[in-house]
Image (cartoon, rainbow, N blue to C red; front, side):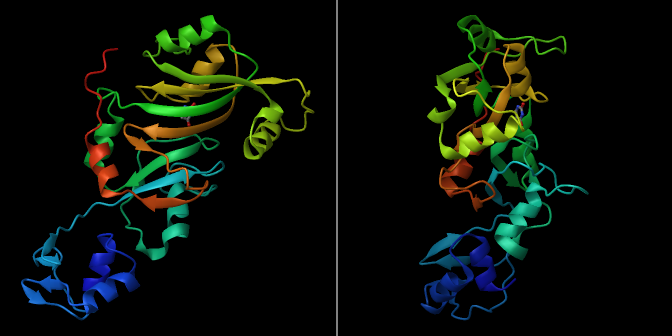
Length: 272
Ligand code: URA
């Protein structure tokens, strides 16, 4: 692999930035100064240092995508755009072929999706035994009475014969339509189709923190509590928080700190 490509893949900067670093003379390969960006290296056996610090090659890549409404959490699909298509729109040909989304969000759910080629990490994050927290922001129709909120938190029957694990409801608020931002108002109106919305309709927003990931779980829980989800967005998975600067459809690589955090976030102490 070319030295500049290798350093760019290792997140030391864009291709142009790493070329400058190489030409500045601070890079060595096997102890010898390397000033040519096009120099060929063996990324598995050569020792590359920047300013005396060894660069270690990782075969794994980790991206955070703010999944938009309308695309599917799959690697390929005949009808819809996939989250991998979106990643390629953002990053071009730099995307490794073996990446996949960690878990699924419904086609109309937005928010945090981790995309990686690290199967071991995905296995841990999705394992029902690890109880990794997933936090969702949602807007639901009407008001949800206190006893239904209590049921959501303690466990609720979502219709498949089992009760959900305890969850947390946070930041619960009630608004009329004009209490939401422009983006959310548009989504609520779209989800109502052609119906005219009465000005005095009330909506509930909240954050729901789960320790499991059953099929359509949030929507089914809210329905069991007597309401209906109009807007759903995942905002956190374990320690990994959706970057507020990412607009729907945008992605970025995880930082070193985020990767370390998510690798250590399995919630083995959670007692159902
Ligand atoms: N729960 C749902 O109902 N949908 C999602 O996409 C994620 C969690």
